[in-house]
Every structure is written in C-alpha cells, then in structure tokens.
Length: 208
Image 1 (spheres, rainbow, N blue to C red):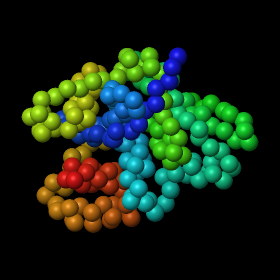
Image 2: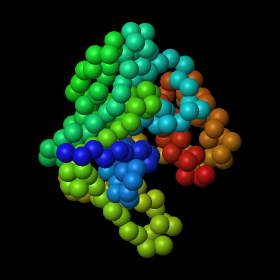
Image 3: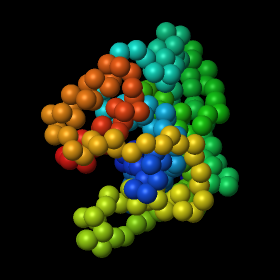
C-alpha cells in the first residue's frame, strides 16, 4: 500500500459544541483534508508545539518524552496513521536507537504531538485517505461567515464521532483588544493554564 504524506493545517474548534477540537491534516500533494477529533489536552499540546512563541515554564508530557528520548539517543523517524476502525484512527511511531528500528503503537493525537517535537514526517495510507479524506466546497458567503475547518468539526460531530471534551466558552475574550489578549496569553502560560492559553491563541488567530 502506498503512503501519502500529510501536513498539519491547524487545529479547529466546533462552532456549536464548546470544547470540541479537531486536528486538520492536509495531503502534501493534493487538496484532501483528514480531520481527526481529539481531546482538549492533546489539542493544547499540539497547539503549543505549533506556536513557537508559547514556551511553557515546565515541560508538558510530550516535551518530557522528547527530553527523555534526547537523553537516550532515541529519535522518531516518522509517524504513520495506519488503520481506521469505526471512526477511530490508529497510529504507529517509527523510532530508532543505535540503528535499531522499533515500531510503537500510539494514539494518533499523541503520535502527532511527538512528530511535531521531533520534526518527523506524518504519513497515512492512500486507502485511509480515500475513505476518510474530505473535499469541502463553500460559497464565498460561507467562507466569509465561518472558517471551513470549523464547519468540518461540526460535520464530524454530527456524524457521530465522540470525544471527551471540557466545557467552556470563550470566556468573553472577544471583548478584549489584541494587546490585552497577548497579556492574558502570557499570564496563562506562566500559570501553566494551557486550556486558557489555547482559547486565547484561537481568539488571537481569528483576529490576524
């Protein structure tokens, strides 16, 4: 089976269900998107890895794994999303130490959080992308009203995918200025409140 390389388009959240996140992957040489519903903690960890300016004062779980691996000369060569069963994606982490390669089973959200930290490529099989990949076409008005990936999250949830989520809205962040949002973001990171930091980053990204 042929492998298709993926890149991270971003993390989106549901417009209708508070606390629901989706990781949006794009095929590198194509237009199909692969949306994966993930939990709030994993969404925060991936968002922090994507946003280089956010520096947690202490390592998160995935950062700790990266530090541990560096200490013992373990590298992650690639991540493969290798199976899709009943709406659940299964992934493998391909590791190497002393020129010996090992394959480790992992949740897809964890595997991608680690791939980001190791700058490792992400792949899936063409058969999975053929089955779960999505083309979305919207009118210009729909594109103006909503981000396409946000709409995608709602469609996934309506189709029955479930994820353990944490409740909570934007806590009035829409009323803050960009300067105030950045101040709140720095304070949230210093206090290790990464759920709040993720929401603030979402609001800042919407303004840019």
